[in-house]
Amino acid sequence: MARGNGKLVIIGGAEDKDGPCEILQTFITLAGGTDARLVVLTVAAGDPEDVGSMYRELFYQLGAGRVTVLHLPDRQTANQKSAAVQLGEATGIFFTGGDQLRITSILGGTKIDQVLHRRYDEGAVIAGTSAGAAAMSAIMIVEGASDDAPKKCTTKLSPGMGFWEKVVIDQHFAQRGRTGRLLAAIAQNPHILGVGIDEDTAVVQNGKDRFEVIGTQTVTVLDGRGIQHTNTSISEPDEPLALTYVNMHILPAGYGFDLDKRQPLLPV
Amino acid sequence: MARGNGKLVIIGGAEDKDGPCEILQTFITLAGGTDARLVVLTVAAGDPEDVGSMYRELFYQLGAGRVTVLHLPDRQTANQKSAAVQLGEATGIFFTGGDQLRITSILGGTKIDQVLHRRYDEGAVIAGTSAGAAAMSAIMIVEGASDDAPKKCTTKLSPGMGFWEKVVIDQHFAQRGRTGRLLAAIAQNPHILGVGIDEDTAVVQNGKDRFEVIGTQTVTVLDGRGIQHTNTSISEPDEPLALTYVNMHILPAGYGFDLDKRQPLLPV
Image 1: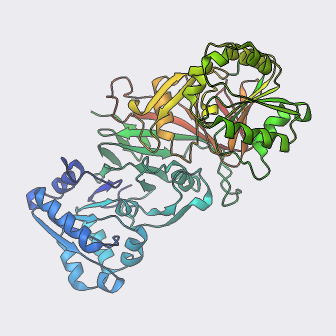
Image 2: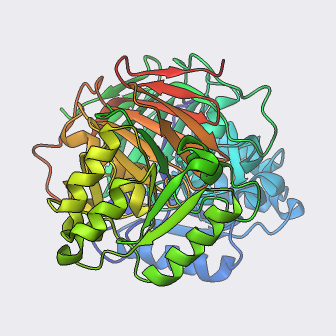
Image 3: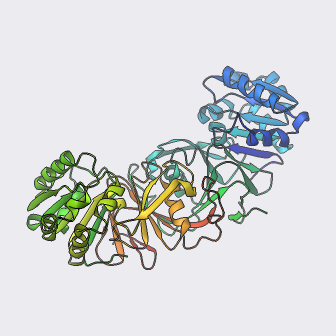
């Protein structure tokens, strides 16, 4: 469930950057279009300069009012007042891909973290792609084997940035065969809803307990509330899990999901 | 549902051949152990000589009574009386991997096809791995994109060998990220149950409407009977499908499934 008054645009990676750029355009529009003040956070990236420049140029091309790139290589920088001030005026904040553990281990508990949550509460749009998507939820997948059966050892979880509660997000979902690792995440506590986002696909969470799908592929929702039997607590770490009666929804663009009722929403 | 009095051992590919060989050993035991008369059918294979020799040696090492390799390169050979006689005495028949369309297009409607079904009705064990597994069902997946969202264009279906009805089988399931293509198969008619078999894993179907899982990974059952909404009939071939309320079961060794009741069976 969303915590603040802001909006989230959570992208499964590899979003279109050459064509109509529907997902990035949606982010800019939600952030105010020509009035948008965007900040690109490159903290996840191994090549922050290149990635930052690429998104700045692209966002300007797509009509954003102002775009700033903020490099936060370490916790010291993430605690500087100047960085916090820059972020404090943003109407849209964009997390690039890279390593989600860089996002949380560098930003968690810093001034920047506080400003991010304040701006989100005040109505800013927060977007993230790939690793930037994974970090959005309160619990995030740090790493896990793709193309594997669900096993406890294959999915490492960590506290995420906490903009979205009661869900665990996975990205590059169909493209990297990640059903198993998302199942392993929800098996540990089916109270958590699994949201697997494909490449060039995003969920838009608009402050209510609902999200809508945009983009060219699908979002897979794995709902474990109805699980009748599992060996999760007794299985060895590398043993495959048993899970019965997991509910699965495949949602392309125009479809949505009610997180409170745990029900898919059809296009209107 | 199984048609004959025989047994099926349907293997998701890459079964253990160096260690305890649990799956291949189970096949041999069901076929009579030291009394087993096995026939290896290499029709699917691109390298039938090598694959045939490998399985013959392995089956002898594992204690099989007699092992014959039958190469059936074309429909003419599959209609020869001598081949039919050889197969007519088998207690266990093993389909190697390769291309499932070679199995059905070469064997379908031939003398060998008749003998296979007769032997199955009489109680023989029929096993297949990888492509040999795919061909077991009445409807089989010929090809389809791995690691992709479900789309009509990604899954090509064909009539299979028909030993197992009302299911569609996929193999190398978790290891190649095939959730999407199996979903695309069952979406077209949720009457069909999707059975996705991981590598080094098999379902053993013992003539009743039940199967049991053996091996080191899992079997994923996708049950679409409860689907409440889908766009399958109206979506474009390359558009992602929408599917709500698919029931998913992840079953490791010792678990089973009742095909009639569509219920998972827990280890006893």
